[in-house]
Length: 414
Image (cartoon, rainbow, N blue to C red):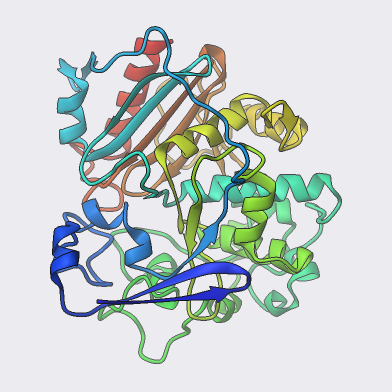
């Protein structure tokens, strides 16, 4: 294995080249059979998701080295606990093993109630957020809209002429932020013919046999190829490409790389303790929709930023009206996915509204990444996992099991 480090658009780019294993790599726990085709899936992802800089090219998202927001232990901090889960009382360490949890942190009234690491994750290691990255990008968009740099009512093509013939062109930025655009982007994780999986080929996340020969090798080339489906316009359906379009818009409007924008408008002012990073393709396009990695504590600081109406370290980081707009959604009457009885979920600006009476919001990521903001109980719960499959197995672990676990944790610590 060889590593080549160079400066890319003012930020650190680390490129890992796949090659024969050496003793140092073996000592680090790097799996011998880690490849571009295997790193996203179990059991390889248990190591890879907390070592992304050694797998995929990335750019740095710097913290502010002069300050960070201190998270201290509560007087009531616990090292272990049990909750009712899947029909019986279980210790959290046993649940973590069954659910492929890599890290869990529970923050109550601004203090840590529980923090534990499993698998290959350590407190100082950044872990892949997957689609929680979308929620970070949304706050950057909200900040730039408040500054007048972008207008959320203007169409995509106004900012990115390269997308003028794509399925995104006529839709407003807010429509794209809400994933109600008219693109024909498709996303079905087990189906490797969908747009999402073909996007993996373009961004260099896989070299699997399903990748088209001679296909695009950057999202700058891939996104303009996405077509239009007017039947989708105005209806929420989950499609990761929308976030990449917003990332491109933010870069075009500011003339700055997205990683730099995240650092400037979110990561530094919220008081991150560690640098984050985000993957980048051959053309220099950073993966806005699911390429960001951060430590568990910094993900918790991000959740706390939303809980505190966009404030951190005594200052406004993200304008409160943008945060409150996300929190204030009343539910989508045409919600396309299963929901617990009595819940009215919503999706707004790359955040999931849980639709419960407390008005919780969440960032979700495939393979089990979560930040849950619980305003009514002054709670933030962050969870990193490595489900072997993108959406779990639908039975013992996955979206449903984690939703049940979240409810148990909220009940325990509220």
